Image (cartoon, rainbow, N blue to C red; front, side):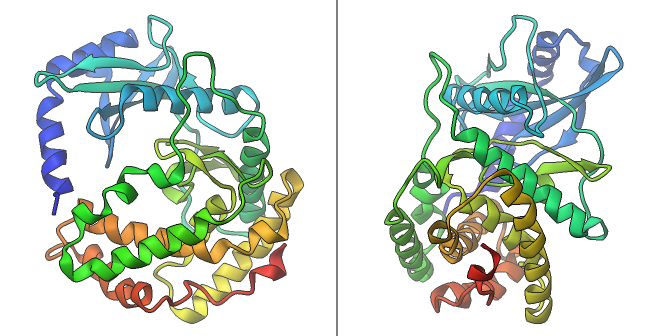
Length: 336
């Protein structure tokens, strides 16, 4: 199996002081102004300039290529300039949204910067009727706006959901004992591919709007990290938050929180966009896809023998995936 941990160490060694100095120069700030914030698949730095706060995302070519990130930023810029609740992309000194910086081994880093989202990461205590209604409005607005999005001249079209690297290379991360997981993955992907694609249910979307990818201030949302944006069914964005909201709750709380979320989210969502009943009731398939995708990612990025989260996830979801158990026992027709 390929180790995401080894890959991260390899990339970290390439991100030298010289590279960081070159990054800071592209935004006309000193190296010492760059402060490491964190990161998982990308490295995130913050800086202050002219009394404003910004973040720089540093991606490695082993994760995304230059054209992929150009297409991502083109989409984010489109959303931002059309009033969506996203972090505005920031230009380099050469007026580029994205730039490439060569590393010592022939690979390269890709840099992009954004205005820092105001507020804080949401917590469970922030959950309320208004919170979920406003969240529904944000996602509904994204889906309405994406219907009119076309890539700018010279920008390559973003990839389709089933071209995601983790899905394409899933067999690299799981051993022979988990062949049945790969079988279940193929099943659910084949089911989803059979859903008719229309202008009203399919387009370029965020695909990963969980609580780690937006901030709130006065119950207003700012969404960021469109790194996984792809052409996908709109219902996937709704499934994602429902999944992460309830994935480690007990069965009683799962139904309680899931129902509360769906009722209020859909109130806000339908103020911005209408998804048909025929499209909406496929949500179970997308919940199962996320369940399997995370299972694969656990093996891709974590030490499953030592990491406690990895152990918990595998213990909780392996049998459910194998036995095709529904993620949550809700009647989704009640919410549309």
